[in-house]
Image (cartoon, rainbow, N blue to C red; front, side, top):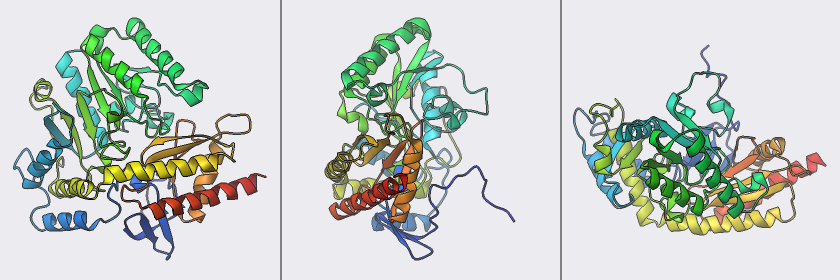
Length: 420
Protein backbone atom coordinates (compact mmCIF):
# COMPACT_ATOMS: atom_id res chain seq x y z
CA UNK A 1 0.00 0.00 0.00
CA UNK A 2 1.34 3.45 -0.92
CA UNK A 3 2.02 5.78 2.01
CA UNK A 4 3.39 9.22 2.68
CA UNK A 5 7.15 9.58 2.89
CA UNK A 6 8.48 8.75 6.37
CA UNK A 7 10.58 11.93 6.15
CA UNK A 8 7.41 13.98 6.57
CA UNK A 9 7.05 14.42 10.33
CA UNK A 10 3.61 15.40 11.60
CA UNK A 11 3.60 18.02 14.35
CA UNK A 12 0.20 16.83 15.61
CA UNK A 13 -1.95 13.69 15.22
CA UNK A 14 -4.93 15.72 13.99
CA UNK A 15 -6.73 14.69 10.80
CA UNK A 16 -8.87 17.60 9.59
CA UNK A 17 -12.47 17.22 8.55
CA UNK A 18 -13.52 20.87 8.26
CA UNK A 19 -12.16 24.23 9.38
CA UNK A 20 -13.50 27.75 9.73
CA UNK A 21 -11.82 30.90 10.99
CA UNK A 22 -9.47 30.02 13.85
CA UNK A 23 -10.90 26.54 14.39
CA UNK A 24 -10.20 23.07 13.01
CA UNK A 25 -12.69 20.24 13.34
CA UNK A 26 -10.98 16.85 13.33
CA UNK A 27 -12.43 13.71 11.81
CA UNK A 28 -12.80 12.21 15.28
CA UNK A 29 -15.15 15.00 16.36
CA UNK A 30 -12.62 16.98 18.40
CA UNK A 31 -12.29 20.75 17.93
CA UNK A 32 -8.97 22.59 17.98
CA UNK A 33 -8.00 26.24 18.21
CA UNK A 34 -5.47 26.57 15.38
CA UNK A 35 -2.59 28.83 16.35
CA UNK A 36 -0.41 27.54 13.50
CA UNK A 37 -2.39 29.04 10.59
CA UNK A 38 -0.77 26.50 8.29
CA UNK A 39 2.62 28.05 9.21
CA UNK A 40 1.30 31.57 8.82
CA UNK A 41 -0.62 30.90 5.61
CA UNK A 42 -4.31 31.19 6.49
CA UNK A 43 -4.10 34.91 7.18
CA UNK A 44 -7.87 35.48 6.88
CA UNK A 45 -8.60 32.28 8.78
CA UNK A 46 -9.74 28.97 7.40
CA UNK A 47 -12.28 29.14 4.58
CA UNK A 48 -13.10 32.83 4.80
CA UNK A 49 -16.35 33.12 2.84
CA UNK A 50 -15.02 35.89 0.57
CA UNK A 51 -11.95 33.84 -0.36
CA UNK A 52 -14.01 30.69 -0.87
CA UNK A 53 -16.45 32.57 -3.11
CA UNK A 54 -13.67 34.10 -5.21
CA UNK A 55 -11.94 30.76 -5.71
CA UNK A 56 -15.19 28.96 -6.47
CA UNK A 57 -16.22 31.55 -9.05
CA UNK A 58 -12.80 31.53 -10.73
CA UNK A 59 -12.73 27.72 -10.87
CA UNK A 60 -15.89 27.88 -12.96
CA UNK A 61 -14.26 30.28 -15.44
CA UNK A 62 -10.72 29.02 -15.95
CA UNK A 63 -8.40 27.17 -13.60
CA UNK A 64 -5.08 27.27 -15.40
CA UNK A 65 -4.18 30.12 -17.74
CA UNK A 66 -0.41 29.99 -18.11
CA UNK A 67 0.49 33.63 -17.74
CA UNK A 68 3.29 33.83 -20.28
CA UNK A 69 0.95 32.25 -22.83
CA UNK A 70 -2.34 34.01 -22.14
CA UNK A 71 -3.07 36.65 -19.51
CA UNK A 72 -5.99 36.39 -17.11
CA UNK A 73 -7.94 39.02 -15.18
CA UNK A 74 -7.22 37.82 -11.60
CA UNK A 75 -3.49 38.36 -12.08
CA UNK A 76 -4.02 41.83 -13.49
CA UNK A 77 -6.35 42.62 -10.58
CA UNK A 78 -3.85 41.26 -8.06
CA UNK A 79 -1.04 43.32 -9.55
CA UNK A 80 -3.22 46.43 -9.30
CA UNK A 81 -4.12 45.55 -5.68
CA UNK A 82 -0.46 45.17 -4.76
CA UNK A 83 0.16 48.72 -5.98
CA UNK A 84 -1.63 49.95 -2.88
CA UNK A 85 0.44 47.96 -0.39
CA UNK A 86 3.93 47.50 -1.85
CA UNK A 87 6.66 49.94 -0.77
CA UNK A 88 7.02 52.93 -3.06
CA UNK A 89 9.16 52.21 -6.09
CA UNK A 90 8.56 48.45 -6.14
CA UNK A 91 6.40 48.65 -9.25
CA UNK A 92 7.29 45.45 -11.10
CA UNK A 93 6.16 41.99 -9.98
CA UNK A 94 7.05 38.41 -10.88
CA UNK A 95 4.76 35.60 -9.71
CA UNK A 96 5.62 32.03 -8.76
CA UNK A 97 4.10 29.24 -6.66
CA UNK A 98 6.16 29.23 -3.47
CA UNK A 99 8.38 31.41 -1.37
CA UNK A 100 11.41 29.31 -2.34
CA UNK A 101 10.84 29.96 -6.03
CA UNK A 102 10.57 33.71 -5.54
CA UNK A 103 13.67 33.68 -3.33
CA UNK A 104 15.59 31.91 -6.08
CA UNK A 105 14.32 34.44 -8.61
CA UNK A 106 15.54 37.27 -6.37
CA UNK A 107 19.03 35.79 -6.16
CA UNK A 108 19.14 35.39 -9.93
CA UNK A 109 18.00 39.00 -10.41
CA UNK A 110 20.48 40.41 -7.87
CA UNK A 111 23.38 38.63 -9.57
CA UNK A 112 22.30 39.61 -13.07
CA UNK A 113 21.65 43.23 -12.10
CA UNK A 114 24.99 43.73 -10.36
CA UNK A 115 27.22 41.34 -12.28
CA UNK A 116 28.49 40.09 -8.91
CA UNK A 117 28.44 36.53 -7.52
CA UNK A 118 28.00 36.69 -3.74
CA UNK A 119 24.93 36.85 -1.54
CA UNK A 120 25.21 37.54 2.20
CA UNK A 121 22.56 35.94 4.41
CA UNK A 122 22.27 35.91 8.21
CA UNK A 123 22.43 33.26 10.91
CA UNK A 124 19.03 31.78 11.65
CA UNK A 125 17.43 32.83 8.39
CA UNK A 126 15.01 30.53 6.59
CA UNK A 127 14.51 31.11 2.88
CA UNK A 128 13.32 27.73 1.59
CA UNK A 129 14.27 24.14 0.81
CA UNK A 130 15.16 24.24 -2.88
CA UNK A 131 18.89 24.22 -3.55
CA UNK A 132 19.61 27.94 -3.82
CA UNK A 133 17.11 28.86 -1.09
CA UNK A 134 18.46 26.15 1.22
CA UNK A 135 21.98 27.44 0.61
CA UNK A 136 20.85 30.73 2.15
CA UNK A 137 19.12 29.00 5.07
CA UNK A 138 20.70 28.50 8.49
CA UNK A 139 17.60 27.98 10.63
CA UNK A 140 18.78 24.40 11.16
CA UNK A 141 21.05 21.87 9.50
CA UNK A 142 18.06 19.74 8.46
CA UNK A 143 17.28 22.29 5.76
CA UNK A 144 20.69 22.33 4.08
CA UNK A 145 22.56 19.12 4.91
CA UNK A 146 22.86 15.81 3.13
CA UNK A 147 22.66 16.92 -0.50
CA UNK A 148 25.89 18.84 -1.01
CA UNK A 149 27.31 20.54 -2.90
CA UNK A 150 24.85 23.36 -2.31
CA UNK A 151 25.00 26.67 -4.16
CA UNK A 152 28.25 28.58 -3.87
CA UNK A 153 28.68 32.29 -3.49
CA UNK A 154 26.81 32.44 -0.17
CA UNK A 155 28.29 33.94 2.96
CA UNK A 156 26.60 33.91 6.37
CA UNK A 157 26.90 36.81 8.81
CA UNK A 158 25.85 36.89 12.49
CA UNK A 159 22.30 37.93 13.38
CA UNK A 160 21.83 40.10 16.51
CA UNK A 161 20.28 37.33 18.62
CA UNK A 162 20.52 39.16 21.93
CA UNK A 163 18.93 36.45 24.11
CA UNK A 164 21.28 33.75 22.83
CA UNK A 165 24.33 35.90 23.41
CA UNK A 166 23.14 37.07 26.82
CA UNK A 167 23.42 40.72 25.76
CA UNK A 168 21.10 43.69 25.48
CA UNK A 169 19.82 44.49 21.98
CA UNK A 170 22.18 47.42 21.34
CA UNK A 171 25.24 45.33 22.20
CA UNK A 172 24.05 42.55 19.90
CA UNK A 173 23.38 44.98 17.04
CA UNK A 174 26.79 46.63 17.43
CA UNK A 175 28.46 43.22 17.37
CA UNK A 176 26.55 41.99 14.31
CA UNK A 177 27.24 45.16 12.33
CA UNK A 178 30.96 44.99 13.18
CA UNK A 179 31.07 41.38 12.06
CA UNK A 180 29.25 42.23 8.84
CA UNK A 181 31.84 44.90 8.10
CA UNK A 182 34.58 42.39 8.88
CA UNK A 183 33.01 39.88 6.50
CA UNK A 184 33.06 42.51 3.75
CA UNK A 185 36.76 43.03 4.44
CA UNK A 186 37.79 39.41 4.94
CA UNK A 187 35.54 37.13 2.86
CA UNK A 188 33.22 38.86 0.38
CA UNK A 189 34.59 42.11 -0.99
CA UNK A 190 32.07 44.79 -1.91
CA UNK A 191 33.03 44.29 -5.55
CA UNK A 192 31.93 40.65 -5.28
CA UNK A 193 28.78 41.23 -3.19
CA UNK A 194 25.55 41.23 -5.19
CA UNK A 195 23.19 41.57 -2.26
CA UNK A 196 22.02 40.92 1.27
CA UNK A 197 18.96 38.83 2.13
CA UNK A 198 17.20 39.03 5.48
CA UNK A 199 13.84 38.40 7.15
CA UNK A 200 12.27 41.25 9.17
CA UNK A 201 11.40 38.56 11.73
CA UNK A 202 13.28 35.29 11.63
CA UNK A 203 10.72 32.56 10.98
CA UNK A 204 11.94 29.00 11.42
CA UNK A 205 15.05 30.49 13.02
CA UNK A 206 13.15 31.35 16.20
CA UNK A 207 10.67 34.20 15.66
CA UNK A 208 13.26 36.86 16.36
CA UNK A 209 12.36 40.39 15.23
CA UNK A 210 15.24 42.00 13.36
CA UNK A 211 16.17 45.10 15.38
CA UNK A 212 15.34 48.21 13.32
CA UNK A 213 18.84 49.65 13.74
CA UNK A 214 20.36 46.45 12.38
CA UNK A 215 18.10 46.39 9.32
CA UNK A 216 18.88 50.05 8.72
CA UNK A 217 22.59 49.26 9.05
CA UNK A 218 22.32 46.54 6.41
CA UNK A 219 20.45 48.97 4.16
CA UNK A 220 23.20 51.58 4.60
CA UNK A 221 25.90 49.05 3.69
CA UNK A 222 23.97 47.92 0.62
CA UNK A 223 23.77 51.53 -0.54
CA UNK A 224 27.43 52.13 0.20
CA UNK A 225 28.71 49.19 -1.84
CA UNK A 226 26.08 49.19 -4.59
CA UNK A 227 24.48 45.90 -3.51
CA UNK A 228 20.82 44.90 -3.49
CA UNK A 229 18.80 44.50 -0.29
CA UNK A 230 16.33 41.60 -0.49
CA UNK A 231 13.76 41.48 2.30
CA UNK A 232 12.08 38.11 2.72
CA UNK A 233 8.52 38.88 3.88
CA UNK A 234 7.24 35.37 3.17
CA UNK A 235 6.17 34.73 6.77
CA UNK A 236 6.13 38.23 8.27
CA UNK A 237 4.24 40.00 5.49
CA UNK A 238 0.57 40.71 4.74
CA UNK A 239 -0.17 42.11 8.18
CA UNK A 240 1.14 39.37 10.43
CA UNK A 241 3.41 41.65 12.49
CA UNK A 242 0.82 44.39 13.04
CA UNK A 243 2.13 46.35 10.06
CA UNK A 244 1.47 45.29 6.50
CA UNK A 245 5.16 44.47 6.02
CA UNK A 246 7.46 43.46 8.85
CA UNK A 247 10.27 45.73 7.67
CA UNK A 248 8.05 48.77 8.28
CA UNK A 249 9.14 48.79 11.93
CA UNK A 250 12.40 50.23 10.59
CA UNK A 251 13.27 53.00 8.15
CA UNK A 252 14.93 50.51 5.79
CA UNK A 253 13.39 49.97 2.36
CA UNK A 254 14.00 46.88 0.21
CA UNK A 255 15.21 46.79 -3.36
CA UNK A 256 13.47 43.44 -3.72
CA UNK A 257 10.58 42.18 -1.59
CA UNK A 258 9.37 38.58 -1.44
CA UNK A 259 5.84 37.71 -0.34
CA UNK A 260 3.95 34.39 -0.22
CA UNK A 261 2.28 32.45 2.66
CA UNK A 262 -0.51 34.78 3.84
CA UNK A 263 -1.02 36.41 0.45
CA UNK A 264 -3.80 34.07 -0.70
CA UNK A 265 -5.15 32.50 2.52
CA UNK A 266 -3.91 29.02 1.65
CA UNK A 267 -3.70 28.99 -2.13
CA UNK A 268 -0.14 28.60 -3.49
CA UNK A 269 1.16 31.86 -4.91
CA UNK A 270 4.22 34.00 -4.28
CA UNK A 271 5.58 37.22 -5.68
CA UNK A 272 8.88 38.99 -6.09
CA UNK A 273 8.55 42.77 -6.33
CA UNK A 274 11.28 45.16 -7.44
CA UNK A 275 11.64 48.50 -9.15
CA UNK A 276 11.06 48.36 -12.88
CA UNK A 277 14.60 49.56 -13.61
CA UNK A 278 16.10 46.81 -11.45
CA UNK A 279 13.78 44.13 -12.83
CA UNK A 280 14.74 45.12 -16.38
CA UNK A 281 18.35 44.21 -15.62
CA UNK A 282 17.42 40.54 -15.49
CA UNK A 283 18.17 38.54 -18.61
CA UNK A 284 15.30 37.82 -21.01
CA UNK A 285 13.81 34.41 -20.34
CA UNK A 286 15.20 34.22 -16.80
CA UNK A 287 11.72 34.37 -15.26
CA UNK A 288 8.82 32.02 -15.88
CA UNK A 289 7.13 28.84 -14.70
CA UNK A 290 4.22 26.64 -15.64
CA UNK A 291 1.97 27.27 -12.64
CA UNK A 292 3.18 30.71 -11.53
CA UNK A 293 0.39 33.22 -11.01
CA UNK A 294 -2.32 30.56 -11.21
CA UNK A 295 -5.74 32.06 -11.93
CA UNK A 296 -7.54 30.53 -8.93
CA UNK A 297 -4.70 31.40 -6.55
CA UNK A 298 -4.59 34.95 -7.92
CA UNK A 299 -8.35 35.33 -7.40
CA UNK A 300 -7.94 34.10 -3.82
CA UNK A 301 -5.13 36.61 -3.30
CA UNK A 302 -7.30 39.48 -4.58
CA UNK A 303 -10.03 38.40 -2.17
CA UNK A 304 -7.53 38.06 0.68
CA UNK A 305 -6.20 41.58 0.22
CA UNK A 306 -9.77 42.84 0.14
CA UNK A 307 -10.60 41.10 3.42
CA UNK A 308 -7.42 42.37 5.07
CA UNK A 309 -8.37 45.93 4.13
CA UNK A 310 -12.13 45.82 4.83
CA UNK A 311 -11.87 43.99 8.14
CA UNK A 312 -8.91 45.99 9.42
CA UNK A 313 -6.83 42.86 9.93
CA UNK A 314 -3.45 44.62 10.12
CA UNK A 315 -4.67 46.65 13.08
CA UNK A 316 -6.34 43.57 14.54
CA UNK A 317 -3.02 41.74 14.35
CA UNK A 318 -1.39 44.58 16.29
CA UNK A 319 -4.08 44.75 18.99
CA UNK A 320 -4.51 41.00 19.39
CA UNK A 321 -0.72 40.65 19.26
CA UNK A 322 -0.38 43.04 22.19
CA UNK A 323 -2.99 41.01 24.05
CA UNK A 324 -1.18 37.75 23.30
CA UNK A 325 2.19 39.17 24.27
CA UNK A 326 0.88 40.54 27.58
CA UNK A 327 -0.67 37.16 28.39
CA UNK A 328 2.54 35.29 27.60
CA UNK A 329 4.60 37.67 29.71
CA UNK A 330 2.19 37.17 32.60
CA UNK A 331 2.67 33.40 32.32
CA UNK A 332 6.43 33.86 32.05
CA UNK A 333 6.62 35.78 35.33
CA UNK A 334 6.11 32.59 37.37
CA UNK A 335 7.74 30.11 34.99
CA UNK A 336 11.53 30.49 34.67
CA UNK A 337 11.69 27.83 31.97
CA UNK A 338 9.97 30.34 29.66
CA UNK A 339 13.32 32.00 29.08
CA UNK A 340 12.26 34.57 26.49
CA UNK A 341 8.97 35.84 25.13
CA UNK A 342 9.22 37.78 21.88
CA UNK A 343 7.68 38.64 18.54
CA UNK A 344 5.63 41.22 16.68
CA UNK A 345 1.87 41.24 16.21
CA UNK A 346 0.45 37.77 15.78
CA UNK A 347 3.91 36.30 15.31
CA UNK A 348 4.91 35.47 18.89
CA UNK A 349 7.18 32.87 20.45
CA UNK A 350 8.47 31.44 23.70
CA UNK A 351 12.05 30.18 24.02
CA UNK A 352 12.40 27.44 26.64
CA UNK A 353 15.46 26.98 28.83
CA UNK A 354 16.51 24.60 31.59
CA UNK A 355 17.41 25.54 35.18
CA UNK A 356 20.89 26.57 34.02
CA UNK A 357 19.51 28.85 31.33
CA UNK A 358 20.54 26.49 28.52
CA UNK A 359 18.28 25.73 25.54
CA UNK A 360 15.66 23.10 26.43
CA UNK A 361 14.28 21.49 23.28
CA UNK A 362 12.54 18.65 25.16
CA UNK A 363 10.53 21.20 27.16
CA UNK A 364 9.44 23.01 23.98
CA UNK A 365 8.41 19.74 22.35
CA UNK A 366 6.55 18.64 25.46
CA UNK A 367 4.62 21.91 25.69
CA UNK A 368 3.73 21.76 22.00
CA UNK A 369 2.40 18.22 22.39
CA UNK A 370 0.63 18.98 25.67
CA UNK A 371 -1.12 21.87 23.93
CA UNK A 372 -2.71 19.39 21.51
CA UNK A 373 -4.31 17.70 24.52
CA UNK A 374 -5.64 21.12 25.51
CA UNK A 375 -7.20 21.59 22.06
CA UNK A 376 -4.56 24.09 20.92
CA UNK A 377 -2.34 23.61 17.87
CA UNK A 378 1.17 25.09 18.00
CA UNK A 379 4.54 24.53 16.29
CA UNK A 380 8.16 24.51 17.40
CA UNK A 381 11.05 26.21 15.63
CA UNK A 382 14.59 27.50 16.15
CA UNK A 383 17.90 25.92 15.21
CA UNK A 384 18.03 24.27 18.64
CA UNK A 385 14.37 23.25 18.63
CA UNK A 386 13.62 25.04 21.90
CA UNK A 387 11.14 27.64 20.64
CA UNK A 388 7.35 27.34 20.47
CA UNK A 389 5.82 29.70 17.95
CA UNK A 390 2.29 31.03 18.19
CA UNK A 391 0.70 32.09 14.90
CA UNK A 392 -3.03 32.84 15.13
CA UNK A 393 -4.96 33.88 12.03
CA UNK A 394 -5.24 37.63 11.60
CA UNK A 395 -8.99 37.32 12.21
CA UNK A 396 -8.44 36.01 15.76
CA UNK A 397 -10.81 37.57 18.28
CA UNK A 398 -10.16 38.78 21.82
CA UNK A 399 -12.01 35.73 23.15
CA UNK A 400 -9.95 33.36 20.99
CA UNK A 401 -6.66 34.85 22.18
CA UNK A 402 -7.84 34.50 25.79
CA UNK A 403 -8.85 30.91 25.09
CA UNK A 404 -5.49 30.21 23.50
CA UNK A 405 -3.64 31.64 26.48
CA UNK A 406 -5.72 29.55 28.86
CA UNK A 407 -5.01 26.39 26.87
CA UNK A 408 -1.33 27.26 26.66
CA UNK A 409 -1.24 27.71 30.44
CA UNK A 410 -2.79 24.26 30.77
CA UNK A 411 -0.05 22.82 28.58
CA UNK A 412 2.67 24.57 30.61
CA UNK A 413 1.22 23.25 33.86
CA UNK A 414 0.92 19.73 32.47
CA UNK A 415 4.58 19.71 31.48
CA UNK A 416 5.66 21.21 34.80
CA UNK A 417 3.68 18.60 36.74
CA UNK A 418 5.30 15.77 34.79
CA UNK A 419 8.82 17.22 35.10
CA UNK A 420 8.41 17.60 38.84
